[in-house]
Length: 122
Image (cartoon, rainbow, N blue to C red; front, side, top):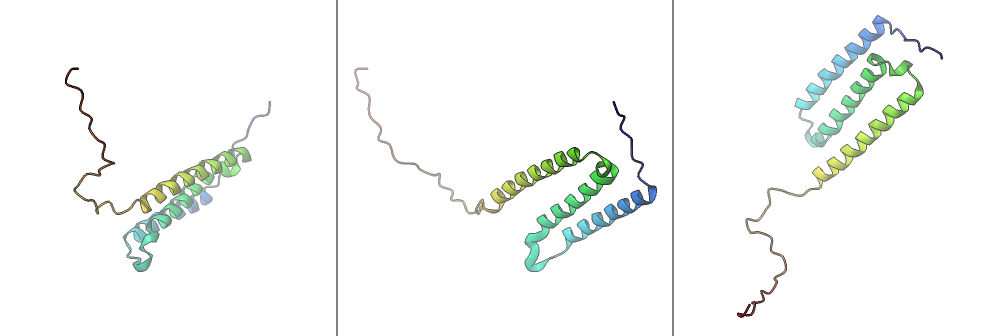
């Protein structure tokens, strides 16, 4: 049985990845507070995109997936795709739900059903 070797990641590379993560965090905070004008609808996709990049950097370098077996990377990518599908369906529901504030105070009435009186003898 062959023993797996552990890859040592050089400290300068880890420092570069860390500084990139800090820069992306600052960009996330700034874009979250910025007024994008006609492009305000891009806040959520932009935040999700930056978060995916940051997660990929953490997984690749700090967790060592870059130097691991390809099957583990495949499992990770499939997991990310599933999360993307779940987020897409959730966002579709939120965006096309309708105006919740535009509700009538009257209850919704279904089809009227006639009430049949039971015979008095029972």
